[in-house]
Length: 307
Ligand code: CAO
Image 1 (spheres, protein in one colour):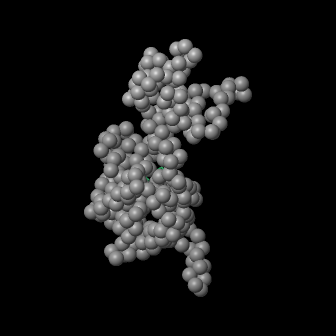
Image 2 (cartoon, rainbow, N blue to C red):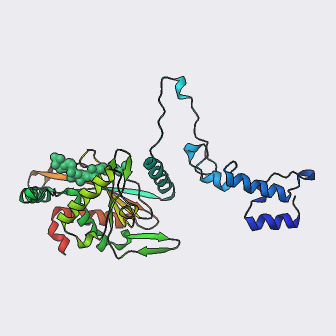
């Protein structure tokens, strides 16, 4: 129960009256009760039902209404433990990854690219540029190949804005960098206008800055598409989480020499595993399979980037 003036007051403040406890006669809600509710929410002492539904599961709330609360376990009961605070970057990237994982309907397509010739070319380039101090990396070729694929499939270079798709006419590619403090995603701006050597140099500078904790917000913003390369570390395939508001991300693992049938015999080929995660609200499975196949085609014969 609440008087019309209290109802109006609650409406103006956006207070859900059914969540306010009344202190008046017969549980009637007073203006003071509404004010107390607002103060409680602002001070963090209280949450609205909508806030509770959005609260991270690990913080004790449920990620979605109806989910069980996060298990509360006294780990020390089972053996010795040590508690460590999450780094600032882990807290920020964790909250972003959690939102993206929960909100975006992810699908991941796996494919392989034959990079035998490309790797030989990369090794040759590095010999030629030995004295320059710039190391040409596979990731630089992947960035350039990705730009070509984004040009061919523009819905991958887009963001959702309500019921509209914002198609970008620029090509800023982010790459995941592992740092002592956690994951960071520096962005190579205008990758379409840069050569492989320039991209390699810039990536090395940005990765160093990321590791030294010196990346500026501008160097991490404006990305259209991200690449997460675990190639230097290992693994076969994985399911990368999309870096919202982007709509797709490419995961790359370690290349291995494998026997491939060339029509007459098995030949040893260097095979790079690709994992493309995409937002099913924007992209369809057929388009994702085509994107991967196109990308693999470019990596197999880099001259195709000119087409
Ligand atoms: N297959 C096989 N070997 C590969 C490879 C691949 N796909 N990619 C790189 N390598 C090899 C390189 O040849 C190089 O070997 P040498 O030291 O013998 O020359 C070594 O791995 C390091 O590679 P690199 O110098 O080219 O560096 P990179 O481009 O692979 O990586 C960077 C740079 C910043 C992406 C990397 O340091 C990094 O942080 N990776 C982790 C990204 C990550 O954490 N992703 C997960 C995000 S989701 O949690």
